View 1 (cartoon, rainbow, N blue to C red):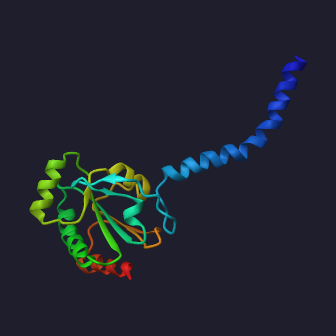
View 2: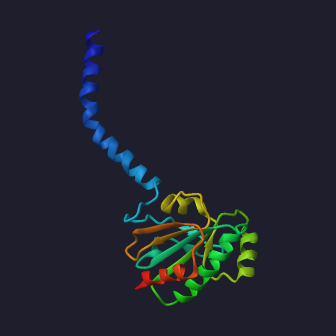
View 3: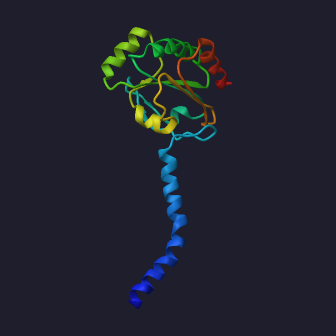
Length: 173
């Protein structure tokens, strides 16, 4: 009995000393799993684009990034993405990138839809890693704005007016 109590006493003394290390370890994992909050730095996942290219931290570095989650079956997304396409064109040569995140799984369907709609902005189907980094809100369209310093600026649910989307060009200044 005495030996058991002695071991429990040692464990009881060691546990409080280990908790800060355990807490920081869990906190580090929790911070990676939770999306960035406004003002926090975004940890960009590396995602594959429909055209075979990639988008990640290297492509976002020093640029403002507008990420739009959308679906081919959403009429509000269709209207919204017309404005996003205009933003993408206006952003050429500036420090602003546009990334579309289609919530579909069939690349051929999304490619055909994007071609038919005239979308030229890069598109990925890798929703999960981007949602985990930016916002887990399950709303479409969902526009996420990251500033040039890589910090989450805004998460904007729903369809936006053209002038509001085009105002995001100011982030490149």
